[in-house]
Structures are given as structure tokens and as C-alpha cells.
Image (cartoon, rainbow, N blue to C red; front, top):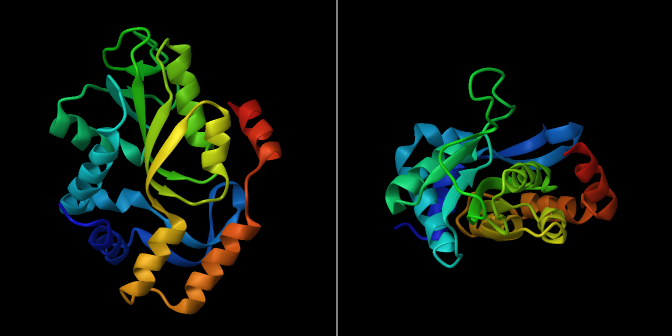
Length: 212
């Protein structure tokens, strides 16, 4: 299995880490954007990400897996094939005909579901998935995440009963990329300043709760 350092470099070289003044979710601007969707075209990288998340997941008691739509779904599928752990899928919206399900797959009430996510920023997408799973009778206490942007999302999740276990924090990721010559000191400082300034707190937590 690749080291975390090698995986970080491979993700950067594959275009999963983008630099610039980029518009992110809800109109916010960011100097660095993490787009894990590109790895569906890089099966070796996708396998490496899945193996690292499996290592995190091995320390957490769980019965089934559920990926947050859409970026985490391919990774979750690889994890379920590798480990034999069943997977369920959350739909973006309830199926309007036939079964009218919001969750696809087989599960039982009170089973412990481990959520898989690509990036945590505000925590909103992961919380929405956790709420849906809990409404269907599943227990959700933990999530494995590729990247924690360190903008308060992990704390928001914690206050809502979900512990996020991340493969990288943003600080760790940019440090690795700097040490391997992919990022300059100037960019690392810019990212660090952005993390400090753009934080999601209790007020944002209330807004997230209202939306979901």
C-alpha cells in the first residue's frame, strides 16, 4: 500500500488538488480545492484511497458502509468489495415510484453504519446523510473522511454525535505537498490564512441543522 505521502502526491498530480481563486460550495471562495471525483479515472489511486480508509475503518466497530453522494460512492464500493462489508446507498431524493426508498440496499434497524466522505468543510453533507440513516433506524456515530479542511466541520459533526476520522487534514496535506515540491511556501501560507479566517462555528451549525 502506498504511504500517505505518496498518495498525497498522486492525488495532486492527478488533478484532485486544484489551486487558484476558486468558487466553492455556497459561493465561498477558496485558494485550494479538493476534487476527489477525478479518481474514478485513476483506478490505482482510487484503490489506494480505499485501502487507507479501510485502515481507519478497521479501528471502528460497524456493520455496514454508506458513502455520501456522489464523490464518496465509488470509494465506498471499492471498500465493500475489498472487505466484504455490506454497503447501502443514500439517494439524493426519495424514489418517486415503486419502492419509494431513500436508501438502497439491505439493512436492519439498529445496525451500526459507518459513513464514508471525501471532504469535510462545514459538515453539512455528512450530517444530512447521518440524519437520513438515523431516520431509517440505523446507528451513526463515526465517519471516515479523506480530507478534513479544518474549517470547523469536524467540530460541528462532533456536536451532532458523529466523530470524523480523517486520512489527511488540510495542514498535513499542504505540508506533504510543500515537502515534495508541489507547493510553494507562499501557497502554503495562503492556505493556512484561509483556514484561520474561514471557519464554521455554532451559528453555521444552526443553519446546517435548519437545512437538513
